[in-house]
Image (cartoon, rainbow, N blue to C red; front, top):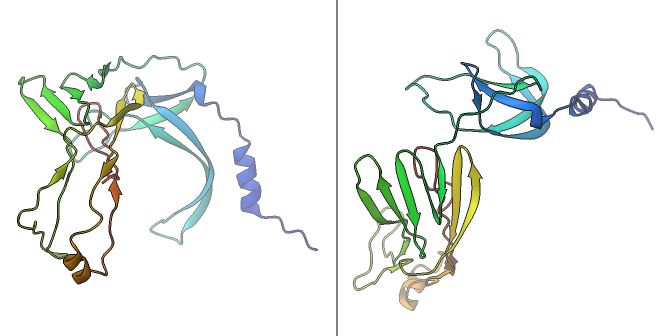
Length: 227
């Protein structure tokens, strides 16, 4: 049986064996200041460039995933960061503006308190205005079609207001705090029998779980990948 040696396989093995000490690595901004981040080794991966003057150029590269806050990025502009792997770089990152509270969090702009039912109150520290009861999920009937929503007459929406949620701290980093809020929520699988027959080709949802993620450094967001 012939033995076939692949240049790319050999290169991948060689790069994967290169020493990589994430503990001694530092992320620096363009001013040489250390930035708090989380570094993950993604191993050696294949890729290619698309030059303007020639065919695509393949390459093998050892890749890292860096998670950090890119603060004060100019509008329609960019900022430059560099990952330095050197034990000589010992600059300390600036203190985090994020503060973890009991079932909540705060920074210099906002304070967020999470209620037992998973809803939350957001306080604007600059104006003192409080936005109460945010993050409540609602489910109701829909007798419309793929273009038009229409709630049935007399239909009473179901909400997660007052429904006890499971609340846990999922992430606490200098640049981000994340809470996971999960509801075990029973909702109707379909409308009444007549409507189900009319729309018999449609699927049904017997239950729902909601996850709300809060806590970007200067904002509060939901996870866009969650319903």
